[in-house]
Amino acid sequence: LTGISVRGEKIALEEKYHKLANEAAALLGIRGGVPRETFNIYDDYVGPGYSLPTESMIEAVQLFARLEGILLDPVYTGKAAAGLIDLVRKGHFRPDETVLFVHTGGSPALYAYQDVILASQEMTASA
Image (cartoon, rainbow, N blue to C red):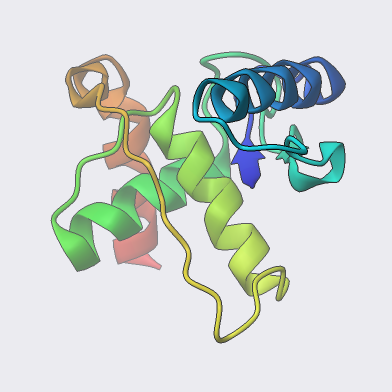
């Protein structure tokens, strides 16, 4: 499981999700649990801080909107998508691997960041 954190806290999140996965496995009667190394959380995409825009987040929001018609919020899914795009570009995923991106909503937050996102788009268009 690869996750993108928008706050940091890599180790704490990996421990939390490992514990939750093992609790779920126990409830389902799955023996042996889930290995700790199953969880890999990246906290490299936070940028200058929680909810603060990054260039890669702006690129991801614009890319998803333009190519797929999917609106991402700039705080959570925008930064998560930026991480996903970067990991794909770096070859993190095998070509035969299925990747699932969980969009958790939040598109109304776009309105609070519209000046930043649109300004970046205008600069890109004029270049």
